Length: 213
Length: 263
Image (cartoon, rainbow over the protein chains, first blue to last red):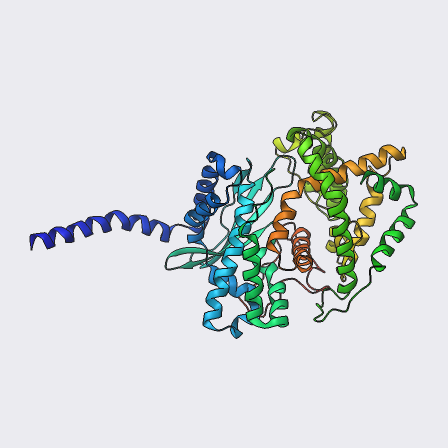
């Protein structure tokens, strides 16, 4: 009996310790979340010589641990698929999300490992209270070049704010894939698109990340 | 590359363009199965695209890679800043033409400070003073004035464009202080250096695109159309509802980039 109470209390203590952390992530305003994750990741990249040298596995581990939890890949895939999403079976949808995620993470990792020492400017959120779908604006300042805008479309979910689309310099990668996916589906169906995505990801497995500056 | 630019530079400008236009035609065009309304000349464009790509792989990219590897970073930045400073003159003109005097004076103030304190532009002191670099050209100015983009075009040597931006590019080149330089060998060397410098900045980006794209042609096209739309609206285009499965993500050739609302 005492043992049971003891165990219960341990759980309560644990819950008390963890709950605020979870609550913080869920309650955190989207712009604060973006800022925190960005600065944390950049800080790690700055200190890690392996990442700067283009260590593929280390970059992927960093992205998986710190960045991916805040992304909604199902919505991203749905957007990229457009009309074809409805024609895919649930099993195909699962595979599509997995393959697209791999491809996007790859691209993101390449971009990340080429980070040098750019400064970030976090713009105040232009959203009304209670909005559940907002865009967070960040700008990357580089000497001698025009600033690069990073815009994150984010949606509020029970697990906190999730990013479902990123614009880099006004270009959304997810939107960019829509024509490509559409063409593949028209040519060879959803299964054909899956085959191309799988082949693409396979061909990139051993390819080095984009060249260091 | 230098010699190629020199050869093209020695030809009268019109003839050089005609020659460049004729080259890809010789490689033949295939019909496209599912035409994109924004890209009615896709088969021609694809031919030019592969011509450009071949030229890039054979000449420009290797030269730019060597340039990147041989020259130290700070020196490459000076070269980049030098050309960037020259281009700020007409970025300012275009901001004025678009009815944005604040931005225009910002650009000219950049030229003033960078040319003097920045030693002929090799140091971008203006950015450190808070005078931001802008991105403007005649194509964007025409869009702000209400010109539609017309069909997408891949230009020989210059790459992705459309009818409006292609005409804009003609104005950009004609107005460029660099090309007004009378000493032809010097002018061509500068043009070649600028081309190599710009390409060397894009080595990483081009690798990322190669790796990310299923079909590089359509990837680059959609990228261009999205990017131009963003530039025309100075980075704040009206957002489309991406969740709508039927929404078209990039406007049709004569879509809503026609008239830019100013607030």
